[in-house]
Length: 245
Image (cartoon, rainbow, N blue to C red; front, side, top):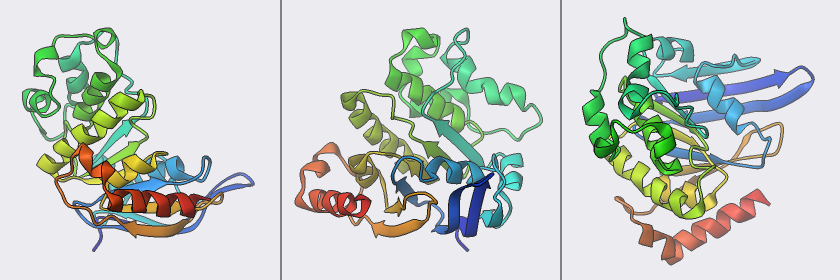
């Protein structure tokens, strides 16, 4: 049974059909990216899978149950483009916020361990204004992992970063993923980012969104930045650009 699945998924907002008859299957521990034109329903799909939106028709399952059930069991972590850190809280208390809000939830990963994982141990007492954009996103990632979810849904988490920081962050994310091997669904507009991170890249069509291509990325792991200089990487980039035309 796939870890994440969607069958005949459709979502409409009034007369606007955002997603139409979409099928999706992701195995446990896979890192899968989604690319596609703006407005094709990538973020809508992520929110349906996370239990934040209800589909108009079709079925969705996370770990064999509903997204809402997975949410209630704290099996889904979210990371968005805006890290949404509380400015009056330091790094440690921002990471710990979900634990404070959900006091009855099962214990997850300790904050100290998360700080080590994301490389912010020396910045635990810093406030968001004292952190770079990349460091703020590391805090957001640590916060998403605080309950040790099995699924991580990421909606353009590096989209607001400058190109250099964005390049660094994708390999930081890979380093962290190698430690935990979460099932990741990652929305991005960057072809290079999708290739560098993923086991598979899903290409969505224009609205109403459907999965029009499923490209396996057969590059060795662990991956470092120099993989982007290889002929195979460039060949994947060309194929994906052609699919997006």
